[in-house]
Amino acid sequence: MNERTIRKIAMAGLAVVVAVVPAFAANLKGRVTVDGSSTVYPITEAVAEEFQIKNSDVRVTVGISGTGGGFKKFTRGETDISDASRPIKSSEDAAAVKNKIDYIELPVAFDGLAVLVHPSNTWAESITVKELKKLWEPAAQGKIMRWSDIRAGWPSDEIHLFGPGTDSGTFDYFTEVICGKSQSSRGDFTSSEDDNVLVQGIASDPLALGYFGLAYYEHNKDRLKLVAVDDQDSSNGAGPILPSTETVEGGTYQPLARPIFIYVSAKAADRPEVDEFVRFYLDNAPELVKEVGYISLPSQVYQLAMDRFGSRKTGTVFAKKPKPGTTLADLLK
Amino acid sequence: MKLEGAVLRNLLARRRRAEWIFKIAASGALLFALGTLGVLLLDVLRDGLGWLDWDFLTHFPSRKPEQAGILSALAGTFYLMILTILIAFPLGVGAAIYLEEYAKKHWFSRIVEVNIANLAGVPSVIYGLLGLELFVRTMGLGRSLIAGALTMALLVLPIIIIAAREAIRTVPNPIREASYALGASRWQTVWHQVLPVAFPGMLTGSILAFSRAIGEASPLITLGALTYIAFLPDGLTSPFTVIPIQIFNWVSRPQKAFLNCAAAAILVMLAILLAMNAVAVFLRHRTQRRMTL
Image: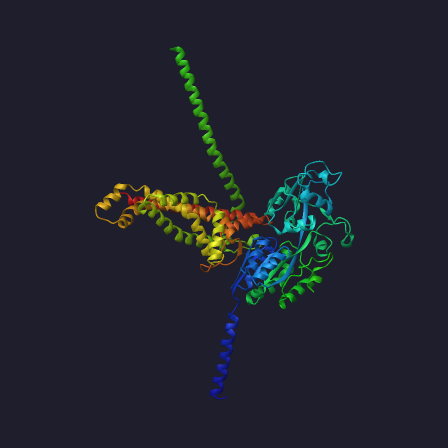
């Protein structure tokens, strides 16, 4: 081995080092902008926190504008990812088309809506969907004012209603599945965008009834009582059913359980930091979703979502209303 | 005479009684205000004091309440305040000087005056909407530190103008006349005579306006700064969050431990406000002493 060969080898070695070092140093950089639903927020926040521990040069921001507010920004191209507690509406889809925003729709968890009463309430163990409709539909305003108006045999005391504000996805969802039309509800109830206010209200009023996301019940179990819901459809579980991991995931706690989503802009997904963030999201969702009080999707659905993202399949699977009994896995296939 | 004396005594006694009732009512009002404040403070101290430590100040927000801190909100509040002062103070003082020293008293300046007084009473959310359309969208600044600072500057500008004008008005006219008599121009008079005397008053009014601004959450929420942010701002266009928004976020969480985080953040906020007001008092005292002839 002469001097020249040695020098060559050394040069080659140096070249390798030079090539490898930047590859190590070139961590992901850039910004990932997320905005939207306050319901999805805790999950995205948890993912963002974990992601930034591993990728300290990527700056993830997670805003809370509500599902509708989030989509407004998303379809203007102001955000990379939109948190949504319901599927995109056709009007929002039209806005996206108009601004040439292609999006990838990915379910990330289940959220159950809980119907709640005060712990000292002895009569309301269960309620049917029909009774809920009778209680919450617009025609009930000023008419259904006592417990006995809902079901004969319940006390003739006044009923005090609590529910989320009209800007929240939870309100949209509840009114759609209970009253038949999104945003159609009686107006004479105590409403707040802040679910803690609802918790406080129901926990301090023996005659209260209200609804909000299951996660808030999880953290206030001792102050509230769950009411079982009966959709009187034995094909998805007979009789009144209480929300739980099994009944939500198994599709028997109907109709008050729903999937929640993130929508990723296809253009943003081409940036490596966004691509990596979404993959990290879906990989870690099962664990983090449980940690923040939601119910994770079946693992098959996460796989299908990952495939969907990998192949950049755009558009919504909810353009037409899915038939009852259709599972998420069926929709995504 | 005897009868008159009795009437007089009667009248006096009635007056004294009225005086006494009024005194009780007035001190009752004061006690009520102080009592409410005291209860609030005690409540916040009880909830927050245990959570307030070095880690709380140097950690980023987290989904786990025990690990959550306010570093990004603290830095955001600090940067936002500095930028707002840099934008609003020169503008406000400049406008006040124009209105007091240059503008002729005719219909135009009167319209401006009325408008400024009205603007000072406009709810802060409206400024948020203005900032959203003008700075975030039209000027394309995005939901950035500079957009937030410009919005906050608009919010405090009317108050600063009003405070600065009051301060300029307290400068006795003979000082100006003496200056003119010595051949000084209007600019020289303003710069060398009026401003130094008016400065302490301007400073106090402005700092009080800024301390109101850093407690504001609603215009920034309208702007879209209600966000999870776990990094420090790195430039004028960087996204940011501030302490009031972080408090708002924590209060609406389901876990009760976040309420302690919120209380601790409120204590930090109170400390900053007290510090700012102390600075105002100190500066006024210092500059005033220097200015006395």
